[in-house]
Length: 120
Image (tube, rainbow, N blue to C red; front, side, top):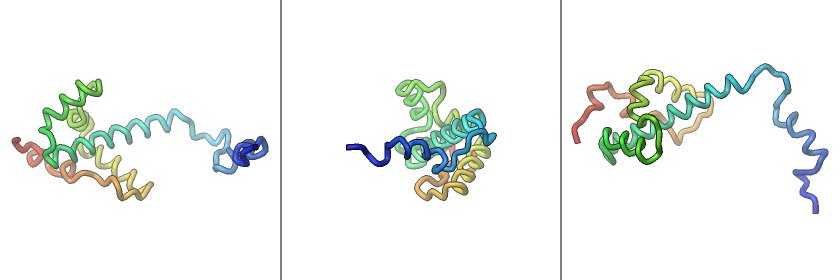
């Protein structure tokens, strides 16, 4: 039995139905930078939530991510490199575009740097 979603005539219409036009001028190079920035901002945001909930000390969290996931830097070190302002801008832009209430920017990320450095 042939699946109606995979019939040849349906497959030919799929790019046009999905709103994708060939030669629209919106290349993958531009999207790659947006995806990378959004992914890094999300990693930093989750790391800030973990630190805010005091699940792990910030230094321990960075060390665990570097050793366990083989990232070059931990999420909080990555956030320090990029800057809290840039991370917040990316997260707020993603929220404005997608209206996703499940992943708001972490309150710990919004706090001043001195307030983030609490001892464990």
